[in-house]
Length: 71
View (cartoon, rainbow, N blue to C red):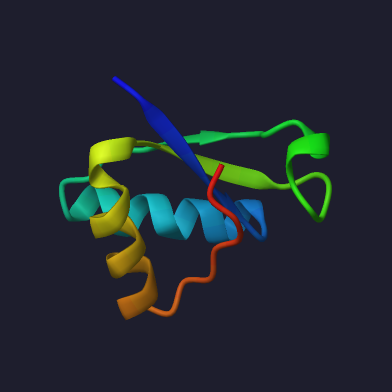
């Protein structure tokens, strides 16, 4: 399974996004990407199956949950 990581602005936002996505059948794991991979340094991320990435982004946008870059 190939995974991607959606960076989040904080741990609180990551937890909120995780709850929303899992409620909708998209299971994710909260991770800490290495600071040199993200434009803003230290952050939190949601590791997600690459095949579900488009649906996850749609749910986040519909619910006004901000996310950063996709790694």
